[in-house]
Image (cartoon, rainbow, N blue to C red):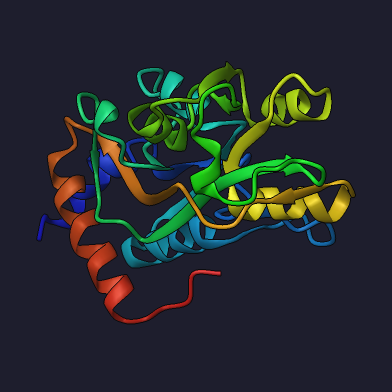
Length: 227
């Protein structure tokens, strides 16, 4: 395992581990409205990482995975909690997954679409956030339906609400929460994607990459809670 000084040079060059988290993914990180503290798997593992290295931690909030990627070369973060999609491997190195989130489709209650298998048919319009990891999987899977790319997950939902599409793709947990708050919609049965979530570092950070691989494997094998 790399020496601590070597690790901190890469993982905390400012003296603080700056961990980028995606605030649009409530399955991974969310703000407690009462305490103002970030909770969820990403936040919890970031805290464990800082404790392991006996280093201070700053959780840097971003509105989307695209925002995290856009900031990758701007020296804004040291580690990032993001999906290890192959299209990102030219810039980033990824740890093994620490959890997996699923994606499905939201439709109106009156829609004839009942399951994931019903959605990929000719004429069906699917709104999906253009930079989401599940969208990249959809692009590889869809053969008949029409994909309508939106700026973010909220825009995809807006398109469904305004009847500009037949289904909106999104993370299952987020879609279920939307249904609870907005009667008249439902999540179809099944999932079209299981998106692993990992810790990313810049490819130049070879010591950090090795350490994070071991850290996540040990964290997951120990059965530590991630909620």
